[in-house]
Image (cartoon, rainbow, N blue to C red; front, side):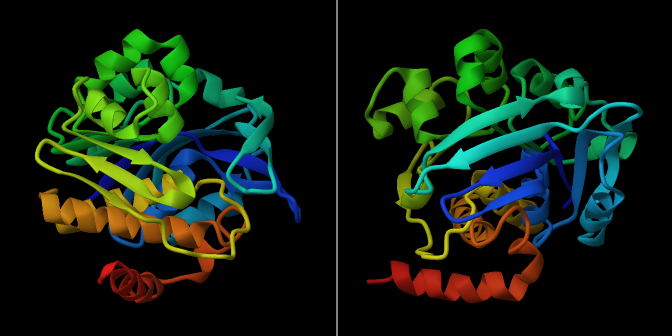
Length: 300
């Protein structure tokens, strides 16, 4: 089933303890789309400036991603993020954010996108995410990501959005911030009480936690020692997960658990290169091979 994603498409400048890469193809919707494209057809909605390299669009289209929802603003400049990772590769410092055309992003979905049954709202302004939901009234599954900025500055809009969602993905610090508790199990249940049918808390190298109506569980991260660049790992996780759900065209409990595993594996490949470097090297077969290893790791 086609999967619609709405979010940022960006140029990233990334510095790690070992290297630096400038002008990397990035953005939440970009990383999500690429990971999801291993499983299903993806329709991308985003905005870029006149400086946007045509080869980036060609790369995405080459993966079968529908980019007719990617608009280009004449005279505008693409959203740019510059950040530096600490030696532990978990903590990072944002050095500069230039929202540029993304600051006025007001997505209008193409008509065929509005028929989508699976929708992912990548990190963005909650009121804008809500506007997207209103354009896909026949959706079967709508999941969103968020961040600490919106929790702190647009809490009311975020809570209104959460009441319309089937699922919410956020990291551990965001879960603690929105609930005011340090206990992640309490936080997960408390976030679900705010509206989403299920909540997934990302814990970076420690995996992810799932909170549903009838079950709670933790899936570990895939152990890779070759962490080059964690940028976009969370978006790749969400892309792998949602891509698998759309491929299977159901989100029953067992399917959700397996989808989280595929998301975990997509993220494990993403961190093994700057930007999309590593993702461009792999195939679905590589993901399936790692799934076999992952399942063996979880069996005892």
